[in-house]
Image 1 (cartoon, one colour):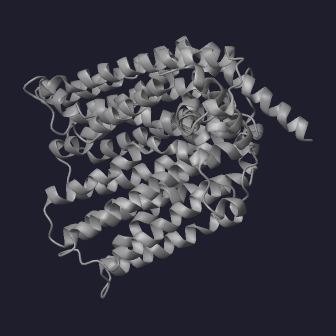
Image 2 (cartoon, helix red, strand yellow):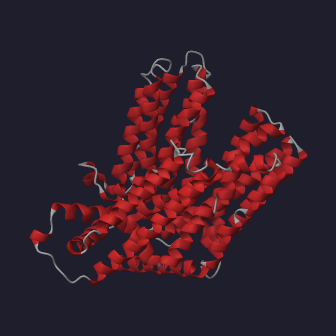
Image 3 (spheres, one colour):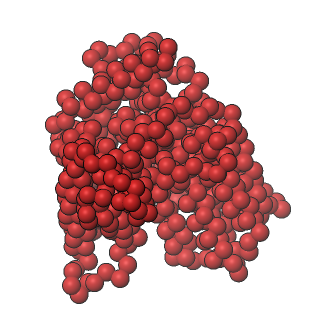
Amino acid sequence: MTSPHTIRQTLTYFRDRRLLSIFCFGIASGFPWVMTGSAMSGWLKDEGLSRSSIGLFGLIFVTYSINFLWSPLVDRIKVPLITKMMGQRRSWIVCTQFVIVLATLQLTQVNATNQLNLIALFGLIIAFAGSTQDIAVDAYRIDLLSEKDSNYMAAGSAMATAGWWTGFAGLGVIPFLLVDQPDWNWPQVYLVLAAIMAILMITAFVVREPQIDRETVQKAIESNYLNALPSQGHRPLVVILILPLILVSIIYANVGYPSWPELLINNNYRFTFITVFILGLLFLFIQQLSRLNKAIRNNNHIPAQNEIGRIHRLAAWLLATLVAPIQEFFDRNGTRLAISILLFIFLFKIGEAYLGRMSIVFYREVGFSNTDIAYYSKMINWATTIVFSLIGSVFTIRYGILKGLFIGGIAMASSNLLFAVMAIVGPDKLLFAGTVFVDGFTSAWGSVAFVSLLSVLCNRTFTASQYALMVSLGTFGRVMLGSYSGIIVDWLDGNWALFFVLTSFMVIPSLLFLYSIRKPLTLLIEKQDRETQERNLHKE
């Protein structure tokens, strides 16, 4: 962290063979998006469904925004029989991939005209299994690389990003190439997609399971809760009930505020109301959790067996599964630093979200055709993301995660100014290609450093829970605030140039938060590197 690596030292990180398994798992994570996204949209369009009907199928992707709801279960629950043979992470990966294959095979037997409800059902199953697979794959990557220093996280993040885009965009061209061939139809194409997913399952069978003794730690935490519960009255119940209220509020906002009481609160203020409500619940949750944690530390009472009932055992399990990951994050980092980190995660990619939400509308209004958008926006973005995620990781390894975040954030903000130039110049294809190239390059650079930081911040005992929670917080910020992008463009009377200038300034609050916590974050990363080295020396 204190001195840059040489180029040769930096490239040695990519010689680790484990990065190949991370790349393959990345392909498996990106591929389900093809089945439920572009391929399904193409199938339904060919069947003559309306744009509004096809658009409703996009709601199944909400599972990727709320997968943090069940992420603690991936840390705690063991898949019967399979976990003993394959381990906690690989067993979950294999099971979710198997479900994806089965659901895809079922789609080959469905008539899209008469059984649209079944297509929606199997699409939802694929999305649910795919989002759960993401939890297990991310946890596997972090567990695997936590044996090394933090620079391996940057290399792993780059390989995961490159793999995801290969599965999503690279393999995503296969269904469209096949369906244009004579005597091929969409059910046959989905049979091929199921076969590809089955091939991708091989990775989970040939790689090794990371060796982390999380079960002992989890049982100790559960025992601490169990000993303290009989003397705590209603407080544990309050802590357990507040968390679902927060999660339900987030889900409610993500699915579009159904049945919102507009007579009481105007639609324009619903995001503000939900945000204040969630922040209030979070304050109460942290306050009650702090008191419960203090009581546990000061507890010297060992309860008799007749004091511990089934309700206490269930409450202890729920606290150890759902609450302990959050509690550990705040205890390890301190409340002030933890909140600053979460605010940074929430704000970092909001400018990118505003741009992304309105990009297609902007391209069409400027004067580009659908073909131009497909060629310049999609293909160029795929290639640049893969290449520059690797280049960005080299910089992050050489100069550190925090410098990578600062430069990546500033670069992402600056690249938005090129869209402002496009708004002024008009439909210039060369400028379009250059803008998309720079945007893909800066986005990949920032994403690698961002994912690296989130990976480093996870505790080895709660990898799946903490990573999914932090990623979902960033997604929540992008989805909820990004949804107001169209309102801002209308408020500016369609002044796209000014809109993109504003998005370039949206990264400033997150960088200010990052600057204010740069020293404790640096110390935290260095401390974890030292602990990793000590563990490795102890093993030797």
